[in-house]
Image (cartoon, rainbow, N blue to C red; front, side, top):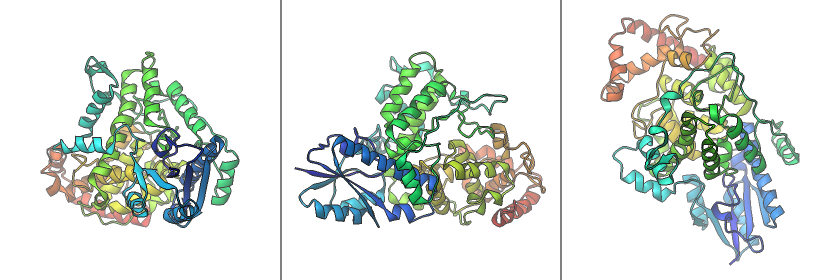
Length: 490
């Protein structure tokens, strides 16, 4: 029977999902560019351009292969599908399991038949089996099981290098007088320019929008950055926006690359002896550990998980998140500017600066989540909901993470060079020049001391409150800081 194969904009791979057994002679491909996706929210224009141009390039590659491709612009996905279905009444509509709860329900109601989503190394069924067997959902436990199941960095049943995790080796601050290898530039083509014109956006050279470009990015990382990825993966630097990070998450998340391709390339390179174990393990953990774990938890925890707010955080989104001129904090100003320029910063600025700030200011989790979804090029619902609600702002009460990722200015000073020349001193917690992160960190612990004193992983931090002789002054300064952040003057 002929099939109408619906391809979402994050399933752009010929060998996976509903396309892997598709027949150009009888199957019809349908893709929908919905107005809800393009205009429904305040999306970063770089993000929109990447998603739409990648989809149009992919549609053209399928046409070149001989497929009939119906690429529809419509108010919603179901509107587009309805139009195409009228044209192909006898075709059965199929799709790989979608990547969000909302689209899953929409396509179910529309009558689509699903094939298993294999854009991850772990099926949803397999993850549920693992999660159901756990008392707590520790990523490290899942990751070790993944290593064993997939037989990656395993020798004679034991972890290569004698340890499962080399995280402690990968915490160096940014080096001085260091020459960072250049990253690839991707010249826009006719499709990129066409999409840019429609969006009123000038395409950049930062991101590829084709399978060929994504493979080139993977090759460049493996050859020029992989060996030195590990030691500086947690560093934040003023002189380089990417450091040795792979920049592969957008391509993994829209399907232009598959996790198996990335892991195969990494393992092959490691086996040459040119890559130290701390870099290999650190990178592989991000792909087969954290990425798979977050996707699994998104489906396991259910659609209501995104509404968690167990710390009762109610503050409106701070103006500095949308306008870097609204803060004097050098770290935040730099990071938000980078996001405006490229729709991307790596995981430590996201977690330890942006999410940390939302956490310790008491920013509403859903407002912060929506902002993160809108501005990052690699943001999808399954990625951002667990990362923000569970890890970033600890809104789930510890269902995912055993303690909140709260930190003062000392962490930012240690892991970056942002503090040099900043208006604020990370060592001070009171006074006009006290770092807002340092002040608000202690204020956050004090505000939630009753909640966190029951957590054995927070006992040392809560005990530290008792040693603060200036806690009353700190509370006064915290109110001033929060007021100044709302006004865009701190």
